[in-house]
Image (cartoon, rainbow, N blue to C red; front, side, top):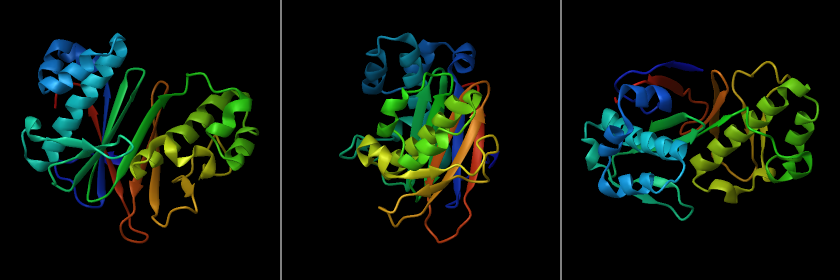
Length: 247
């Protein structure tokens, strides 16, 4: 699925930055990460009352700015952001770069593209799964039927494979939860213990084609990535970079 990252970012490439909060904050204390942010973004992070949430938000915001600067030769403080009607952050400066970020339980992931939409989500599959009666809010009937047949030891992981890919797709579309997660499906292949070469999106409400990718980050995180297809049947490379200190 992925290859090591290189300094440039071509139109058919997406860069995925992966960082653990504990590793990054061991390399540099939290107050120094916060100091890298503009005052208004620093204030947003500091409003979080839970330490882990504050740290994840701080790291995500720093990596977004550093990642965009890495691919556009602009200082991190140069970037300006806006939001669409559904609250999705967008680059306002008009460089052609796109981004999306997610964080959960100590892991932060940021995806960067050029001239195409990207969406990313991460979750720990050690989280509790919704009760069966409530799955209709999150999964399509096809996905629920698939989940009902997986062995108990794969149940949580399979649910969060569905969830991260669906969330990544919704974020790439820029519509979030308003898309109706029960109205489209992800095809994970015939066997839950054997990941497909690439998961497939089944959504007859869009004519745009999307590349879906998934990644496991030990010990218990899953990452889902959705990438807009610009040319029919094009190949898109996902380049990964592990971040352990301030880039």
